[in-house]
Amino acid sequence: MFPSPHVRDEKRSHDLASEIARVLGRQEAVDTSPIAIQEHSYDCWPVSIKWRQQKHTPFPPDVIVRPESTTEVSTLLAWANTQRVFVTPWGLGSSVVGGPIAARGGICLDLSKLNRINKLNHEDLVVRAEAGVNGGTLENYLNELGLTLNHSPQSLHRSSLGGWVATHATGQFSSRYGGIEDLCAGIRGVLADGTVFDTGSAPRKAVGLDLRHMMIGSEGCLGVITEVALRVFRKAEHRELDTISFGSIEEGINACREIMQNGLRPFLLRLYDVDEARHAMGDKSFETPVMFLGCEGRSAIAKLELEYCVDICQQNDGRSLGVTGVSAWMERRFDFSKIESVLDNPGGVAETIEIANSWSGITQSYFALKSALASHADEVLGHFSHAYTNGISLYFIILANTADAIASEARLWKIWRTAMETAIATGATISHHHGIGLARSSYVARELGSAIRLLKDVKSVLDPNGILNPGKF
Ligand SMILES: Cc1cc2nc3c(=O)[nH]c(=O)nc-3n(C[C@H](O)[C@H](O)[C@H](O)COP(=O)(O)OP(=O)(O)OC[C@H]3O[C@@H](n4cnc5c(N)ncnc54)[C@H](O)[C@@H]3O)c2cc1C
Image 1 (spheres, rainbow, N blue to C red):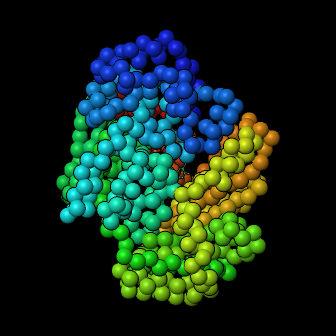
Image 2: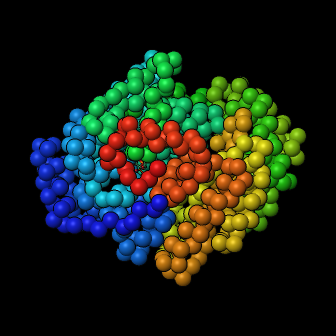
């Protein structure tokens, strides 16, 4: 059930802040300034952006706490657990589903000061860094050493390492390098009662359950991640790119499937429908679906791999347009300003919703969502990315214009309902990488079916008092 608004009480917040400062022995660790409370009441979820534009603050935290070590997180959680105070972790607040919003007040645990890059093991190619480190800072640090994360979410420069793990994030190069579940080698964190754990970072182990997965995708509901070991990579020697146009979206989807099922692993594989292709190519008259394709590694292998990929595209009526379209996209791949400028306008609606389905179901999901969402939007842009041997993710950008922030919030809720219902009806999963947060919390039970029992039992054992990120899954 969607949580009721939380009413913040100044006196209670002040008392809570004084007590936490005493417990941590550090006054600077707590913050109840109006500006900090405001900043931590909204994330990047368009619904929360519309709340801010309406000057509506349904879920303010009572106090912000900024720990500087795992020990401080442990001390705080042990105390909060005995006092039954809610704690909602906050990475860098780039969630687009309301994940770090403190739905029942209490402590917003801002991890941005846990931001040290602790150790790089060159021989193993594993970096250990604290959870609050900014993704862009980590990538720049590695780049100077000739290395790279190969985890490249569009939010790279505005999201944290711990946030990636907590949300089960993925990036633009996942078709070759995988999502965060493939890149995360180990996790250090703190359970609700203050217990510190470390999963180690063996290349693989068969010692019972893979305990990293208790935290990957846990969205701050099962523990607080304080340090992560990540597999990193040498920067590729060479990249080959191409832009391919297709006669129909079905042929493009088929080419993606053939590429993956033939064992090819392009680092870049994105297929835009004709409506999004116009934006992706920056050409209003562009008239076909388009694929951005890239292969990398040792020069000769990358060239050959791209040749095989293009060959498969040609067998599916694809036509090579050269590097211009895809190169321009590579340059602006972190730019989100067009969506932001729509959202800045109180009546502007811009929502991004990602789902996934198997190859056998994805085309049906695409056409059903495209048509269902059209009745709530001026434009419904669709693209396929993050491909696997058994399926692919599907991402929609939904754009509309309404009278004001109230109308645009109402429209966003309709869009969410329509997208979730249609995804479930066509057998798709309701989220590929943005996660649950507040946006999808009402649909989790239907998605998981009988498996929800596992999630409930894990939650009740790891967080028996329900203090961690309440009101979410
Ligand atoms: C422009 C834009 C582009 C985006 N592109 C992508 C993309 O390409 N791929 C993708 O996967 N996502 C993308 N996102 C979504 C978002 O960036 C990711 O979900 C990201 O992983 C969130 O990281 P964060 O540090 O901002 O976490 P927050 O938003 O602060 O928190 C997200 C969730 O994780 C929990 N959490 C955060 N840190 C911790 C921790 N240390 N321990 C326990 N729980 C924690 C929070 O409680 C919350 O539930 C995009 C968002 C934006 C705004």
